[in-house]
Each structure stands twice: as structure tokens, then as C-alpha cells.
Length: 86
Image (cartoon, rainbow, N blue to C red; front, side, top):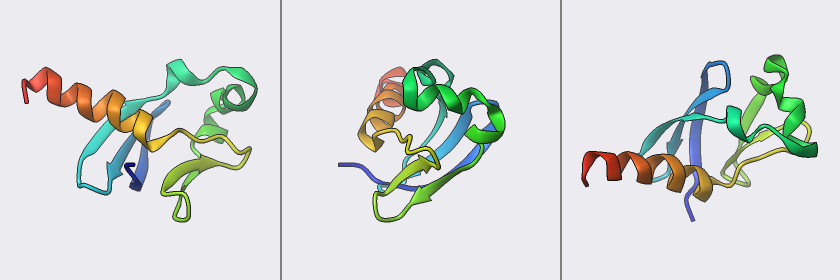
């Protein structure tokens, strides 16, 4: 399982995330902000108010929303490697 060690807001619904293996990914979460837990994050002020939870090694929001680090890693880091031909 991958762990998120650092994250920062870039703009809109885009975050730069660093994983425990040193890989970094720029992730656009806009297409995932639907449903009871994630829809409130469409309010950009609320979206920007995330933190890295050290006990979960994940990014979390005050309403309990979070994204699985493996999902983010596989979607963005693996895709980056595939597009580079690694």
C-alpha cells in the first residue's frame, strides 16, 4: 500500500501529491467530486482545506472525505510511467 507524505494545492481541484517512494503526481480530482461525501468539496474553499493525516498516510477533508492512496498512485503515477514507456 502506498502512503501520501506531502500534498499541496496547485489550483482549482488540482493537487500535487508526494508518495512514500518519492514519486510525485499532479492530480486533478474534479471528475471525482460527486456523491454524498465528495460533492461538498466542489466548494473550492472547502476543497482547499485538506490535510495529510499521518495516522492514515492520506489526504483528508473535515467532512470525512478521502481518496485511497493506492487509487491516486495507480491512476496518476502508473499512468505517467506508461505514457513515458517505463
